[in-house]
Image (tube, rainbow, N blue to C red; front, side, top):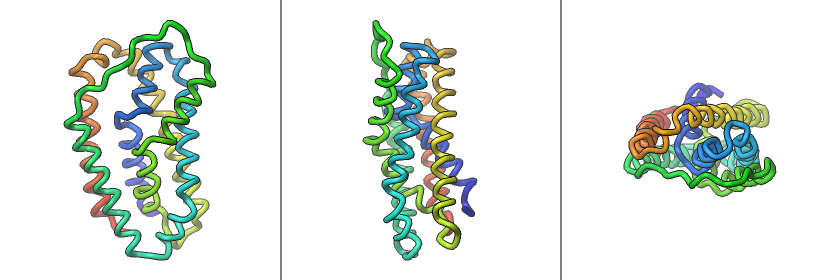
Length: 203
């Protein structure tokens, strides 16, 4: 894992970026408080493990055998990150749902987070095109895979918990149009930067 530091930065930017999972965590925090976010956060993390496991075998073998496949996926991944960054920069501020009158169960929130991650294009594309580039074909595949996936899932839990805390502290600003637009543009600029870095990274 020669590019682990870059992976850590790209994965952090991916998890930080506003998307269905982040909006779910922020909304749950505003509705139910910090404790009400845990089920959804764990669901997103487990969903990341599932998506990674599905993409692990065939993609890993292909990249180990083909330098061309590695190059193609590298530029696809970089292009996707830049596209996502530009889209986030131009996107309107995301809106939150109205507060719920009742508290959803832990299981219900867990299933919501799991289903969001399993159908999240950002997560699927990350594990299919960006993630495999950080696997060294000359080293033990399973160990590298486990380390990277656990790193990603840990980032999901930590960052989403921070989002939940942030939502509690900055409720008024976060639900404003200015606050939502600021979050989008900060995430967008970050994605463009790391997309460019990924495109110039060497195997």
